[in-house]
Each structure stands twice: as C-alpha cells, then as structure tokens.
Length: 238
Image (tube, rainbow, N blue to C red; front, side, top):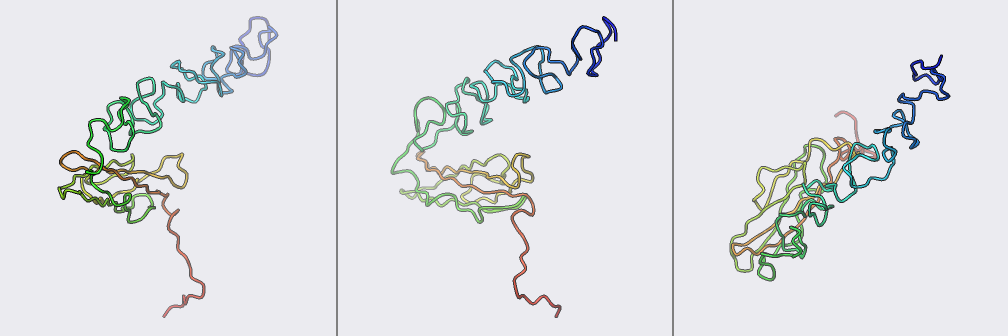
C-alpha cells in the first residue's frame, strides 16, 4: 500500500487516499447508496439504483432490466401500444388504436366512440350464455372443446371469429365449436397454473354482432389429476 497505488477490490486502502475500494465495483461512485456489487446498473447516475422511482425517461432507473415500466411510455398489456401512443386501456390487450370494435359498449379502437360503425341491438345474434367448455381446467398439452351457441333472429347464417389468449391454439378460429390445445409450457411466473381467456364474436350478414367469453385454467403436468385410492377397495389380485 502506497500513494497512487492501484486500488484493488479487497477492502483495503491500497492508494492511501483515505478511501477503501474506490473506483471498483464495491465503491458507490454516485453516492446513491448502491454500488455495482449491490446491483446499481449505472453507478454514475444517482437517480439509478435498485428500487429507484421509474420516470418516463427511456432509462432503467430501478435496475430491473425494464425501462419505463409502469409509466405512460410502457406497453403494459403487450398489444404494441403504450398510453403515450394512444392506448386508452393499457391493461387490456384487445384495446388499442386500430383494434376491431365489438358490440359491448366499450371503445376498443380508442377513438372516443363505443360501438361505432357497428350494427348492434335487438337484431344481433343471440348468444346463449358464455363460451361452453368441455372442461374448465386442463394440464399442459391437453385438448378441450370450446363451443358457442348463437341464434340469429332473422334466421340468417352466422359467422364466428374467435380470439385466443397467447398460448392457446386451435386449427380453425371460424367455427362455432373448436378443439383447443392447451399450452405446452407455462411462464415461470405462473407457478403451478395460470388462467387463459378466450372470446368469440358472432355476426350476421348485415354486420350485427354479439360476443361471449370463456376462461380455462391450465395446470402443470401432474398438478390437476391425481390417483386416488378408495378406502376399502379390494386391491388383491384376482
């Protein structure tokens, strides 16, 4: 140890300047309470450190690898639009500028008008209840059936358009009944299971629309089905 010696990250004052480990990853260069070793992702900016407030400035202020999350610049629902870009409900992936309108009293395309350019009302197809599922829960990769029951008051043909949450899949999205494939994997944040939603729009040739929703709970393999030994059952070989 001597004046102007190289400062090693060893808990010692190698250069005799009264500071230990200054200029190393253990040193808090910007005096915000965190060093690089403590998780500070920009130790030259005292506004950037783990747990810092996240303003809409294009930077990762809280060092979680996500800039601007929770601000108007972030696309919270992953539909391609943030609030700054005109998303009027950034918690609903079906609501964004240019999204298709549904007859539901809501503004899907963020033009400040609900159900505009649609024919809604008593002439719309009647949907009997919500989406009917063969089972409301499945394990990874399992197939279930989803059906919607719709009747047109004028007796005309009805077309169907399904919208499935990312992870669900089907061979066709234009039938009244679908064979759904449950996801083959779940996000790490899902734990043992996660809910997946679906919707279907039923329309007649004049453009009248009705809609229905469904939800299926997807579980990790082995989390939904379990073998049960019945009390008193005869398990002896014949």
